Every structure is written in C-alpha cells, then in structure tokens.
Length: 201
Image 1 (cartoon, one colour):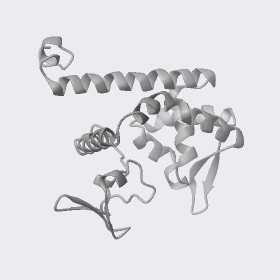
Image 2 (tube, helix red, strand yellow):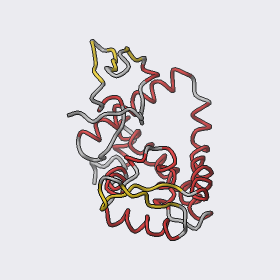
Image 3 (cartoon, helix red, strand yellow):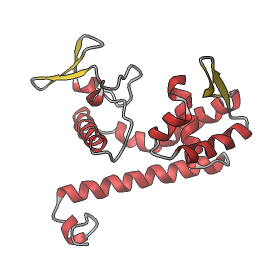
Image 4 (cartoon, one colour):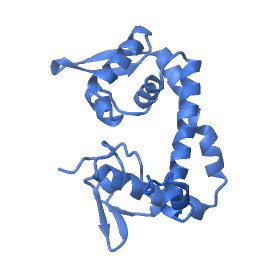
C-alpha cells in the first residue's frame, strides 16, 4: 500500500505521484462529462464514444474488430453496443463488396446529429487549457505524448495513431521528421490522432 501514489505521505513527497493522482482526477472529469452526455441521449458512455469515433474517422477504422482494439474492449462488448445503436437507427451496416462476411459502420443522419453535439462534451476541459500560456501548453503536450507512447509500448493501451508510433516518423538528432510529408516537424505539429498514420511494418 505504501508504494501507491494514492498513499498520502508518499504522494506529498513525490512529484511523480502527484502527477499520477492529477491525471486520475482529470480522467474522472472525463467520466463525469461523458456520463452526463450519455444520460441526455439515453445511451451508455461507450455508445456515445462509438458515435463520436465514427463521425471523425475513415470507414476502414469503423469496423467492430478495429473499434474493439481502439477502446480496449472485447469484440462481444463492442458488438452489444453496436446492436443497440443499430436498433435505435443511429448507425447502419455497410457491406464490404470484397468480403460478404465483413462490414463497416456508418452513422445515419440522426446519428451524425447526436455525435456532433456529443463531441463537444469535453469543452469544459478544453476551456481552462485555452487559458494556459503557449509554453505551458507545449510542455503539457510533450509530456502527454511521451506518456501515451510509453503506455502503448508497454501494452497498457493499444492502438495509437500518433507520430511517435508511426512508420513515417523518425527522430533526427533531437528533431522530428515525417517521411510522408518529407519535412521536419515542430513540436507543436506533432499529432495525437493522424489520419495518414501508418503502423510500422
């Protein structure tokens, strides 16, 4: 117990522990805001997250197996949520012309409307971030990108479409370079979710 960052004597003497606890508080804020949004639409939090994901990502990522990896859930759990969203006519199945057993998911007009409104659920968190200085934002983003990458490498979280784990990214003497863009990237240009992301071979 004494090794836990939630153990107050350790927490009060360790910056690392306080950062962990602070991140846990922020994750709680996301849960509260997502629950509020889901209750307003008579949906579960994961169902809201699925709608938002489908709204902003290409159809090749809108398959049950990919969504299961994206949200670190079983295919059965995702399938259950998809069934509810299909029954509510918030999404439809789009058959794969090359594989009759495969399909992707697409939002209906009503699904897009709900997803568009729900996507702003995090505005209460974005607002105070907007009040930070440019330097504070950059330090925060750099730290979070490194943390996400390390958690991905250790297997705690799965799919990440960020620069650090992309086949097109390389680091050159402390600078960032994108082979796809054929250009160096400023730290402010590093992406968390890149539409051109390619998994390493």
